[in-house]
Image 1 (tube, one colour):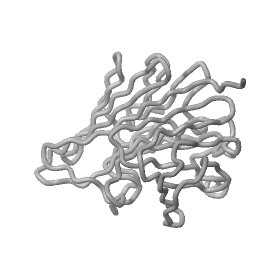
Image 2 (cartoon, one colour):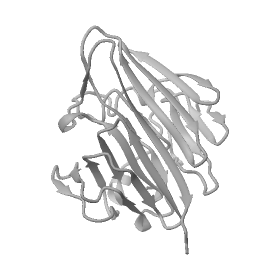
Image 3 (cartoon, helix red, strand yellow):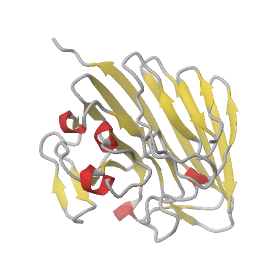
Length: 256
């Protein structure tokens, strides 16, 4: 298993520049699968995977979600955890730091090649919830949402709830709030143009070898992403940079 770095309430893997745990008075903010695979070449299931320089296979490239999440980054631990990676003329830099209410992170991509590169960036956080059946996500009401299962676009009406595979792209940048009945987690993106909401549901989860039995009930992914117009990426000229950020705040739910 790859050695993890602990800095206060944060635990971090240099492989993938991957935040695996964030302790808080309400418990860990992040879910980590009991069957996660560690080490270079493996994508950790849970925590906050880094998605770069493309999302899924939207740009027609492999591996899914890019090479950043399975590569070993140069990492420094200080007031902030900082990490960097250069491959094929693309430089990625990440910083993660604790806050009084949770944590923040920022991801930047700089193009050092001689050509314009089409890229995408995203955070893929697995937020721990008490039970997905009792969890609601708000903030997207009135916003267009692309269903990646059906390819249909609808306007979100009311809170998002979960009873099967849920894989949708909120085509906007609202603050998103997760409420699982015991606490709320607020997810605030910066520099993004979409927010992906995902949970595999029981049927898909059963096919995932790196996810424990019934563990799909323990998380929801709320993913600030820079996908580009029509999810076809953004062009970055030589020497230019793009970046995204994410702020996460947690609070115990007021039972009164």
